[in-house]
Length: 349
Image 1 (tube, rainbow, N blue to C red):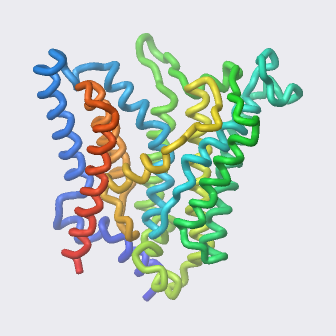
Image 2: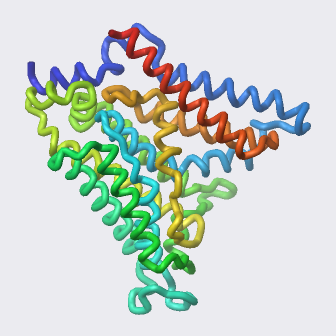
Image 3: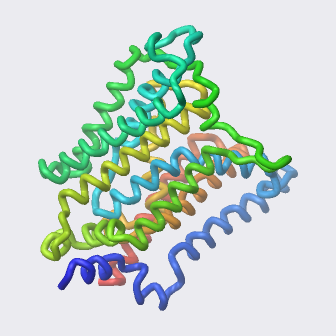
């Protein structure tokens, strides 16, 4: 069996079987709409106002999705290979500090590098991307060449990156960025009242690029093949080790991009930035239908899973549900998604 035959077979959900079933995205989208309508119905008797017909609230929902969404696109690819990335949140924290230190103006009160201030915005952006890429490559190399389980390799990176973020400035925040860098986290008016929100736009562009890459390119086919059956992928001619380094490198790169967007929007770099983001990203990926066993999942479904998480959190806040209860319900949703995934896999066997 050739490489392309194995890869096409592993891509699974985009093949002939998908024509006989309702697309995964449709079923998840129905869940999203149902949750939105539920909060809409509850909103009138509880708050005497609409949940969905509120432009500011919808804007906040999409903004909350943007940063975690960029991370989730990379995490989804690692999970499709049958692995996982627990380090993405900490990598965000580490790369945020590096990018922030190079984005400061010369008049900043606590400047990290006085001789490296007022730099063009592209410098801190590239520094953040490079730092994230490096962390991802280290993860991939440990997994592919040192045979360290993905859980352990990325757990180690999670601890190390968080430690680096704290060590970099002894825990002190970094703020006062150049206007050109801060623009990345803001909106730009183009025609009259029409404006582009850059964090949301960047997230959607990233999701579109990797949706195309995963569905229509050899990169995506090889990723599905490795997740479906690593040994078969290796026998068919796929360089599994090299590809895993590539997948984890991309996940790290996207964590670096998320860090850049986050600090540009928030106006400061914090050592605790991105805390818990890896869990939110994994939760969104799982809710979106990506199998933790590997080989199954789509970027579009991950985006919908992100929206489900954001809508649930926003809806609970809207109704005044305590944060502790929110966490309990969100945990139940994640476990339910995993149970459904296991049920689907048993039916296919």
